[in-house]
Image (tube, rainbow, N blue to C red; front, top):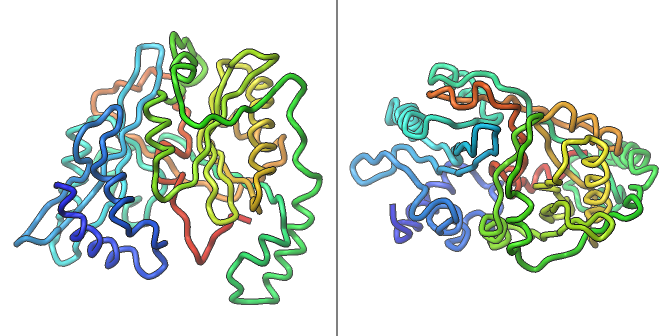
Length: 342
């Protein structure tokens, strides 16, 4: 599909996602960025459709991802915006089957009850759990920003969240510094050169990918390099979404949980200091990292199953995948009706 077809997609998404869809997701600029704009590892359209009589019977967008494993970099996919016309029986299933067969290795996170019933029939198997964590920063600002369907319930939530906001997020450990970067450059690529991790498989990142994400028209992303005692050792990406600041990606060149804890403390403190932050949110697919986040005062607020389709068994011997929010649309999706996790 060409970008000239964007008006057709606008009609499709309005009908499929309903009135709660944020207007930012229904702009030509955002749809062009998500569906058609070149990415560093992908040129051309990422939108795949089945058409019937000139109308879209099924649609899915390929979100390419990759992971560093001891055997090399493994390319993978996550499929976004899986939509099917209920009047065209089997179109959605056929499209998902075709895309899964074509790429061989793909993941699915959460999904509707219908999707969770269908995907095992298409060869997807349980792989793990994506856990979503939150930390209240300013409970009263959060209370004012939240839709109030029930004032009494919201007052009780305010009392609880005020307690959850204590104590404040601790400052970074001595020697750890976050530096705001306008764009990614060679420094970020160097962080991912010659990686040899055996405990887990980190996501493959690049300066070109980071800059693509920074250009998302529906997100307010910011990039930070991490230094430890003056030496570059990692980076993280934040996204500010209507009072919720998300740590959507973080990497540090270490396999020690204590080092990751220090890097996460730095990122959480930076996120909490941004004007307008009511809560900080992130997600993790690694059990040991879950424990790191809990020790930093993050509360688990959701858990979604991860399903893996690995037709060729490429990941059979690989360490667990370190899946983060930028590996799906979780980094930019939000709902006006449910803007917070707490």
